[in-house]
Image 1 (tube, one colour):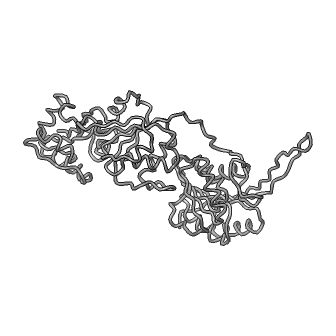
Image 2 (tube, one colour):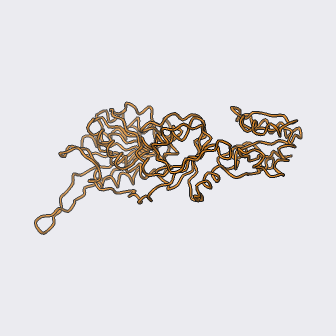
Length: 426
């Protein structure tokens, strides 16, 4: 005896084959969301019904108990149950041999067919979940729209499954807030195959932001112009806004390259940037970690404003910057895979201790120093904490024109200190 997971559409029995309709009518127990059970109420006569709405965690037990008593079970899912549907969840909870999937056309296929646009290259994203709330600038991975924003920055074409709260207008408002609304053509398909079907094709994102939707929608976003590949690493110092004259804080490109290399970043790394200055290290780290996130802090108000301007200019979305003096605010950040300290306002020893304590196993703390006093204080602290550390001194020289020739001009020497915890005791 198996549980049949049946894909259904909003046109009811018209969207089912005779064999699939027979599977629905012959079931002893039918499980589905409120709307789906209502849609098939005339076909469910003698079977027991269970409303899935708000009871997802109980579903595996319902199925297992019914199968043990040799009942025929049918779960009514929407479209293709394996495309952001309930089938993936059930395969994690029940033996595969107990499940049989009968897929249908997905609502995504129907939406693309309505406008004659191919969909094999579309990135599929679902926000059909709990209420994510309106998007706020600088919101992090805990927000329900964060994965969608990642996809918007990294893909040319998207298909988005919405929900009753996370509606197309809310998505449009996020795009406007992140200044990417003009980059996409947008289509919203609502209530497909129903009498009140509505397709809004190629309207502006601003127009969609002002409309009302019920959440039974598919949003299609197609980028107007293909993106030019971005430089991932090694931006010029002049690519960053800086405080002028030479009082602004920026880690020069040669030192920045070595510091980022020593951080051992992965695509999903969580990074702290303490003493962000112009933001150069943290922002390049964000580019190298598209599935990760960078949390930055800068105490100087002028540099805080400049770092924020650099983030906007570079189109960095996985980056949060606060204007304060470390360690204030660090307790609210998730444990990092890497930490960069480019500047401190004193209390260096306590800051190093805190950072090493919060680092994930095998994580790296990278520090830059230009004064002997701060370097000495850092090394003595690392020794006291029994940390594993090494140090590199960098002194680059850059060519400068002189008449019709060139000379070399030395930059200030910088010490790069790299440290790890030697054990997992915190």
